[in-house]
Image 1: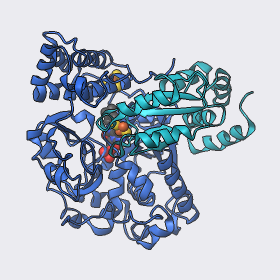
Image 2: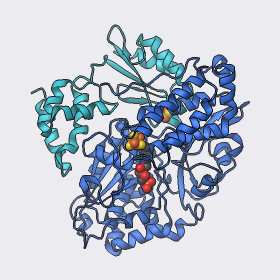
Image 3: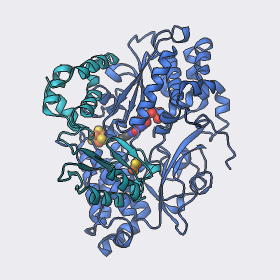
Image 4: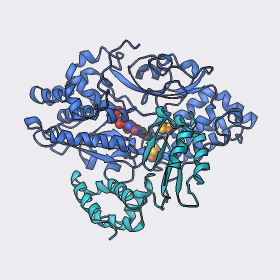
Length: 156
Length: 446
Ligand SMILES: Cc1cc2nc3c(=O)[nH]c(=O)nc-3n(C[C@H](O)[C@H](O)[C@H](O)COP(=O)(O)O)c2cc1C
Ligand code: SF4
Ligand code: FES
């Protein structure tokens, strides 16, 4: 079993919030992705299936439906650039071009050195503070190109 | 300066407005305490009904009336739930997050009052997965409230029991649709359910459920505290109260503003205490009234009262009241292409009209923007849109995708024709916005 004990304990408590345990699946996938390398491995899907008493294929069906779950390993840092309407109107294309240049990653790709994965995402609810990126699960809003450069420079 | 009473944002000052201490200093939870002591559940529903509060999640459905759809517990002893829609994923919309960030206890007090009114034993707050900060703030408020005896068993010694749980979504827009949300909460793919049955009869885990938006429920304590008559002094006859207007795009001061429903859109765009107008030297070219699905209108429609009926008379919907503003440096076809891409990406694929219609709309707008538009494309857009909506699909996402396409043909036909005739976009070839068309977002990896 790849599921560490602390997560198993956490999920045992989690399922008490719901009349049916399966409702804990999506929050549990989040916790696995957060703690276990930034993606959902096939092994984890099997463990979650066992924990929730469903088939692995059902876990896969859910994990693959939701854009936030990654089924392949990401680089060390993940940059998501919103390219929906409000961000586009305030220079998201420039942000994306600059992010490509600074990271050496292509859109939906990982840089050769494995340091950066670059993704384009839909509206993140930061429309009146656009443009924005999400860097390693944190929003950066009212983003300038200088700030972007500083943020990327500060990544390990 | 503004000359209207504000209440929604009245407590959102200082660094600690999200804490129980600050909330209590402002009289927080006193309304709940009074309601539990002095009011019957039906009195709370009656107050909300009399206020005329309409849902802030997009459809504007009367909230009090919705609550009465819940079956009579004397005849139907099943468990009952309140599901709070905090999925906030409609492009342009960024208002519910302000409530969760700045005044989460106000939301919790609203939830407790609503659960008391409808005799729900638990509420689930479905928060879009990307809203980590908002999730943490609200979760911390729940912990504080539980420690203070405001959530759980025998609340404030009244005998009323109520649990509030947080639940995280994972980036799918369709989970904002209320039945898609319920499927997602149950741990499944967010596939909307055919209706009927409606949530009040068959909701979460098949039990009676009411779904309300964050901002809707946030209004409730104010109504119960100050009364329906006070509430109706604000806003317009058929859309009472204030609302949160998110203004984004090409304006001097983008932001989320409180205003009475019925405030003129031109004022919201231009006034200094609102968005402060488009950048100097620019003119308004196009705008969305309330998120991407309300579609783009031409500049000459801006003089309209922002309430449900007035915006409807102007040919669209108030939606989430998220105004997106385009100035004359922008290409409306590019903007439309982004919207069409969004719906193509977000269709859950259950209904062929929606799945295929969204794909077609996206492809056609893309080829027009890229200079590959064909004669007949504009009529094709209209006929595809007609094939998608309304009422031909399981949920309203298909309408949400078709309406902007129809609005585009109605308001900006000349721009579409010009793109087709000239073989592409003049603005984006020379302008400062990206020369290439908007890139595709990743499909959920398969
Ligand atoms: C495709 C689609 C997406 C939706 N997204 C949201 C959303 O993110 N937040 C929301 O409150 N309502 C959303 N709605 C509306 C909900 O289905 C529902 O009407 C609303 O949450 C009811 O709350 P209210 O009556 O308080 O407005 C969406 C509807 C559709 C069709
Ligand atoms: S209308 Fe579209 S999003 Fe809604 S259920 Fe049908 S395919 Fe899914
Ligand atoms: S459009 Fe980028 S956050 Fe809404």
